[in-house]
Length: 420
Image (tube, rainbow, N blue to C red; front, side, top):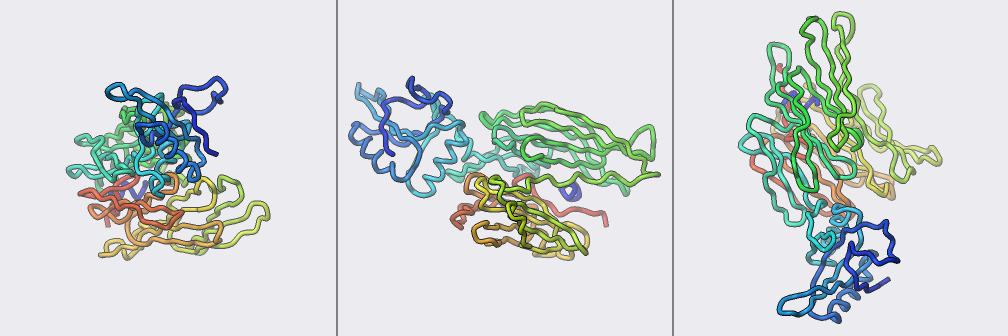
């Protein structure tokens, strides 16, 4: 995408999940994990006894009709609010070899596992498209592609119920000015993978996208004012992850009197979910300092100083880990066009250890996403770009995802073209 992306206690219940006993808490979810089926109740109960010390989720045995008039006994686990939550619990058990297989069900019917199913951006016949990657099997398959449309940004909602993505028809430079054509925004329903176009935004000179902590998605597009040749109009469209347009704003800038509109500021939650720690970034004499401060005592310490700016930051759900990446795609980075570019770094900070315990260097953007105990991030550029799946709690590489032509978390990382 060159210049564009730069800017850019054991119990056995004889009930099924979802069919609730009158005394059962009706506020619980209706998603369960189906683990194994047995020909006898004793066998099923024995399996439950083996599992009870390895999970804090409720276990149940459900009796259903089998073949030739015989009954089967299904061992089921949990009562979850969503397929994503159920899949996350199952994946942890599977990865720890507590179970060897599972399926997510709702009201006794199988449903897609929204945790193991990850949407990524990959190349399809030279075009940035959407792919479905299965954490459980490692399989990849094309989800969405459209001739003449390039996926330049993919963002998830915080509850993983939906995702929005932006495409462009083309981009480049016209004389000294950049351009971007045929901008469109789409929504993906993660329950059924249905893709819906929300709006065509037209053409512009610059395009930015901004995920506001998974609550809102902003598209900022600068265009020339056709009636005033020294004016640039900045259009900002804000959507929720259900695909509803929340707001549309327009600002005009007279380049003869004021500076060109600045890119949007990076949005991230600097406080840990348990509100115990705060992550801060400061700039001094061309270097960025990264610090973690204990909120209760206001005592902080520097954990890193670097010339690379902050690209992305996120806390683990329990607040015990901080993951952040830094980036330098500027023309002054002399490694940018070398054989081994040094453009980005990814850091894993442990609150228990009080220090950075893991670091990745090299090319690409190091865009990342968290799923339970898993850290997924992209590395390298263009056709060499790939995605690494890493268990950050257990310090274990799970998988490396590669697609012919490259792949990434939000887009396919490209080295920007500065027109120099």
